[in-house]
Image (cartoon, rainbow, N blue to C red):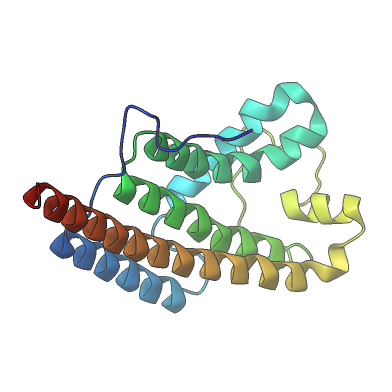
Length: 193
């Protein structure tokens, strides 16, 4: 099944050079910020709200989905927004949401790496299930038999986050150049008539 993006009623929106330079500078500065923080970035509070909301939203599907729902929803929100922007051809919106989808993996990696240590202060909705069990990733990795691999899994998740953020910037630059070239070609073709 092919999903036509953008929607047939829309075309990808061009990105002017000043806007492109501004976004690249923003993402570059944000990545410097992300490299310098010990645990969580400046957007962590928003990600935490999405994470906790995910536990509630998925709770009607049973305990396993309640457990996984926090991380799933934390990733689903930027992914769904990116698809929405792509559907309308809004290039910078897609880049922004995709960038923060991958950025969210950095916080998830911190959480995964803490599965055995259990040093992070936890926030929970309600009573946390009242079972006295440690946080999500302790439970998830224990159920999967991977608790001893928490730091290795976290390293992979962190690497995917960084590579995804860099790839998103590359995609935005590619799209800006491609759309600029198409515009120049279109103008030249119309002038040649």
